[in-house]
Amino acid sequence: VTLGIDLGINRPVTLARSDGEYVPQIELGESMSHTRMQFQKRRRDLSRALKYAKGGHGRDDKMKKLDAIRDSEHNYIETTNHKLSRLIIQYCMENLIRKIRMEDLTGITKDSNKYFFKSWPYFQLQQMIEYKSKEFGIEIEYVVAKDTSKTCHCCGVVHDNARDKEDVSKYTCQTIDCNMFGKVQDADINASIN
Picture 1 (cartoon, rainbow, N blue to C red):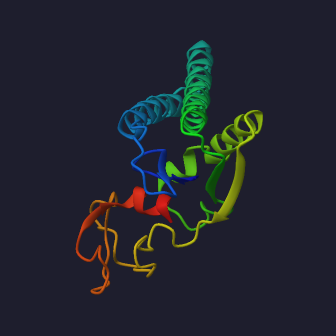
Picture 2: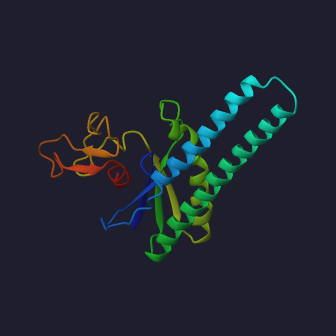
Picture 3: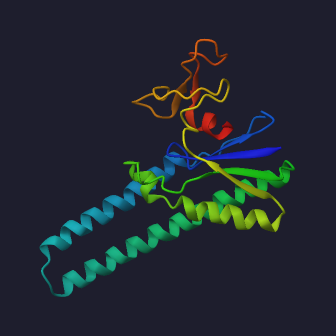
């Protein structure tokens, strides 16, 4: 059995098994986004305050606070990535899964204007999954990420307009002959199956 992992915006990781068995998802996406936006807001507010502080002790204190916020955010990201990677490897061990397939995200931020894609260190998460999987003899394989989120897992047809423009967490196959035609699916689960 192979475990497919989709790294996305709706949730940081979405899991699917090659045998079609149900996989409970790790639902951290909403709380992560909320926490990240809090960090971003605090940084933005301090940056604005620094704009008007020309010098003196007040500026130094604000710079220290800005550095402290950056350090806190970095620690939060690293801790969350460790937690996610540990949960994934634990799931593999409990279910005797010996192979993980993940997207090769090389150059993914080049075409993306999504803040979350550019700011969340997916590479760090993949590295943590990789080194933890080696400890337990789980093989890692990288697959081309192109069109995994636009391709129907059932019929294999790529649909550019299958994802809802207003709610990108939803995917609907557009092929009339497909068993999944017209059915609203979780877009990240569809991608992780692919």
